Image (tube, rainbow, N blue to C red; front, side, top):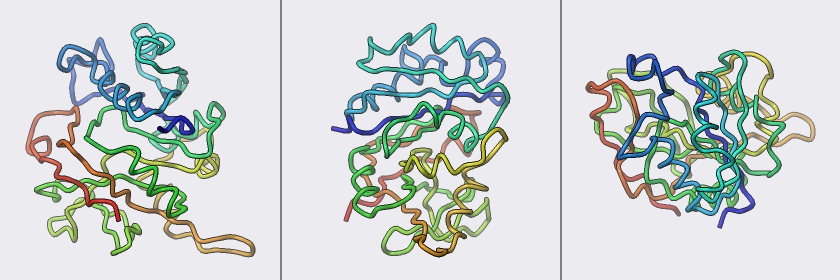
Length: 248
């Protein structure tokens, strides 16, 4: 049970690549197997034992609250936080910081769904005392993505942009565990990318007096199903996520 963990889901994007479908509904609210895509993610979060979710909204923000209400129908307590201006992934996470109460926080991109064992990812995060833990998946053709190499202990080594000769088939699955103190350290009130600013900054940090080295770990929970992501059809969308490495 993860009743001592809260979840943040980032759902503020405009989904421009899916227009005209997203002219009337945000991308995470597009119907998928009869219900909004986001409903599948929220169900997985609830099944893992998380009870409180904060949605970081922006585009057509009222659509989410009108559909999900207070979350009781899903067995959740849902809080809605609206971005007045686009803040990116890192800025969106920082924007909800004052609504969080737990020390460890699961963070999800609202347009990605994969069969992540959330309990295993949180267990890895706590056992290794990481600052941030990322769930990675393997893809058949990593050239279409930025990739995330790790060492034999799961320590993240770098965040690489797309390349024709990627050193690993591991990519970011859009599922993280953050220490709340790390969220509170993200700059406030401006756009921030976790992939291009927050995570590389943690890797580059060196311990000062009384400080410890930041640890950025790859979670090795079991991915029981392929990773799904809402987006424009094409080769990038045809890449199939394989199982992440088993926990150690």
